Image (tube, rainbow, N blue to C red; front, side, top):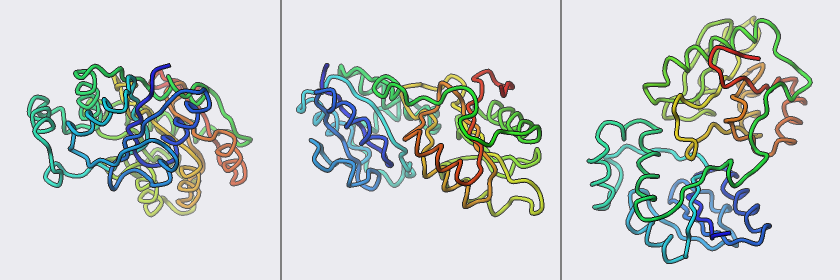
Amino acid sequence: MPKLGILAGGGVLPRRIAERRLDSGDGVFVIAFEGQTDPETVEGLEHAWMRLGATSATLKKLQEASVEEVVMAGPMRRPAFSDLSLDLRSAKALARAGRKAFGDDGLLSLIIEELERDGFRVVGIDDVLGGYLMPKGTLTAAIPDGEAEEDIARGLEVLTALSPADVGQAVAVQEGLVLAVEAVEGTDAMVARAGHLKRSGATGPVLVKIKKLGQERRADLPTIGVDTVRAVVSAGFRGIAVEAGSTILVDRDAVVAAADEEGLFLTGISPVRGETR
């Protein structure tokens, strides 16, 4: 197997990928980004710290490490373009991309394009972490009731409508009311915001999370883990519905156990928009 380069965002996912690859006897090289990657992600691993916007230097590091395949993993807190110190290659790529670079998926697709220009093969997380995709159906003891199913359907409706705008992947719905839509803040922060807006005396909100229509599968697939469960518990949610076959479920047993402990449901919904079973 060729050496795998990991462009590491936050969270545990980049480390999980590295460990899986090393267990198979293959090499890894991690690009850690200043202000984004958790330091423990790269402990004991071959790596280099880079700044966002240093495209030429990042690609050179991958080439020097004899990387052939590259995967992007972990959430990235995207700064404003005005706050980035862009090298010449980054500036030219953004100029070529135009308005599409302002969307989450558009920017990630641009990164993939630059990697492929230099001969790297970009692979998806599901290519290197078999068995981490959310299956269809409910994994927890608690199951969505009729009201929750209606909120899930409402969430799918909203996310499908927003998909062409290339904004976020998640929405919080309570009794048909959209409490919050994910934007640049990320899912956990959106969930916390929705917790302050939920209606008292009613059943808790539902988190619905799916990939965007036409989204590049090799970048930023929806991801949930134990931290997601903790966030929805803290915000008073009743359950989580994510797209089966297109959502990365990190540490499945721990996630299901944490949800069961709190009486939450966790269900994988159909990729067909408007269908919840």
